[in-house]
Amino acid sequence: MLEQFLNFLTRDLEKHPQLLQAISSDLASRIQSLVAEVEFDLDAPSDEDE
Image (cartoon, rainbow, N blue to C red):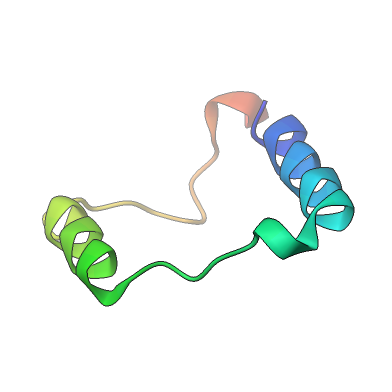
C-alpha cells in the first residue's frame, strides 16, 4: 500500500509541480515534537513484507 501511495504522489507531482510547497519551520517543529519519542527501525520488515 505504501508503494501505491508513493507512486500516486510521484504522478501527482509530475502533473502539478507548481503545487509543491515547502513546509514552514513552525510546522516542521510541531512534527518533530510529535515524533520525538517515537522509535522505529527502518530495516525492520513492514506489514507489506510479511
